[in-house]
Image (tube, rainbow, N blue to C red):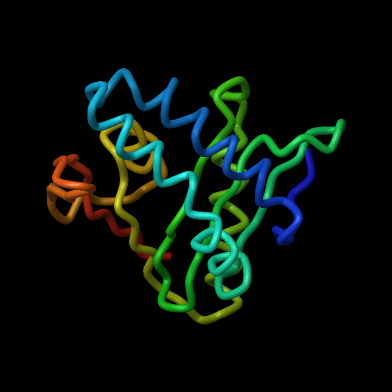
Length: 154
């Protein structure tokens, strides 16, 4: 597995991975209506492109150059994305991407990472020393989803 910076040409594969992970992996913790509205955000090509341009956005690729995960960090220490392909779960990919995010934050003199973790991702973040600050409800097209504000001092 290699980790590299994301490129605009990666957009379609990123959107596909994002959609597939939400509709399969997150479906155990969110209902059908919630999954539908969340997965629909994969259509926001401009949002992905903006993050690739403005954030520290990393991709994990396997030996076949298939994107198997991605993560992004903004300049304030907010870990915006951390997704692993639905067919590559529990292989250490998220851990490697998080390590890259932590290394990047350290070079930027960021001392605290913040994220909004899904119900599904919360145990991963807890395992990696993130603390829950609060549970929150977010609205997407009038549908409520629960996630968790979490932080980790680095």
